[in-house]
Amino acid sequence: MRIAITRAVSPSIERCQLTHLAREAIDLGVARAQHRAYEDRLVELGCQILRLPVEPDLPDSVFVEDTAIVLDEVAVITRPGAASRRPETVSVAHALAAYRELCHIEPPGTVDGGDILRVGRMLFAGLSSRSNEAGLEQLRTHASRFGYTLKPVDVRGCLHLKSAVTQVAEDTLLIHRDWVDGAAFDDMELIDVDPSEPFGANALLVGDAVIYPRAYSRTRERLEGREITVKAVRMSELAKAEGGVTCCSLIVQL
Ligand code: GLY
Image (cartoon, rainbow, N blue to C red):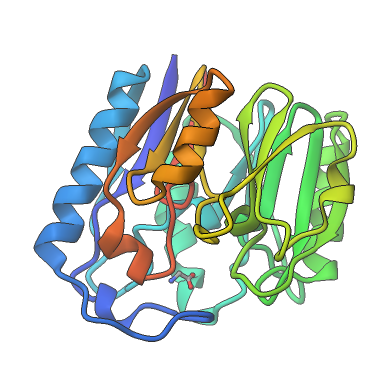
């Protein structure tokens, strides 16, 4: 049984944080429809949706991934790198308290969940404009109690580690090597994104399938060529807010 924590798109999303993208108009109605379709894919993959109340004054609050790292034994509530995003953690912590012991990243540490790629008991942890060394050290302390190893990885040119690399099968990662060094993942099989699709490395593995943006058809062919089941979603409006498919949920395994 899996819970997927989500939150509907905020009416203020047009004021979202942007780091590597120019601001474009976001169609709120389309964004909400795309988000509901994304939730439908999660349900098809066996998740029960726990949708948090909309946050009208928190523009980035649909991107719940950044607010917590949910491990099997504990949930680490983050301190997001963008100060405007820190209030998002309150309602997420409240929801997660029903399922996990909680611990917290404290100042001066910052961590965005989008920088933490968990593969088994390994946490690849992006050093980015959002997650700093103090934050990653705190995460290492919390997670090492339960046998997890944390490996810092430099990220360049994109927002989060998971903009550059995500897990698509038990021992396989999808990667855009301009943004992260593939040598950091030396025990894993790597699939490169198609060179024409630099934003195509963000996939959400749920069970044996991945939720993946319809826009990146060439990379999708590479995934399907490796026998990976792909559930395609339209993410055009949330992509304008610098969000991807991993950003929009927190999966809690029960
Ligand atoms: N707009 C997503 C973020 O910057 O956190």
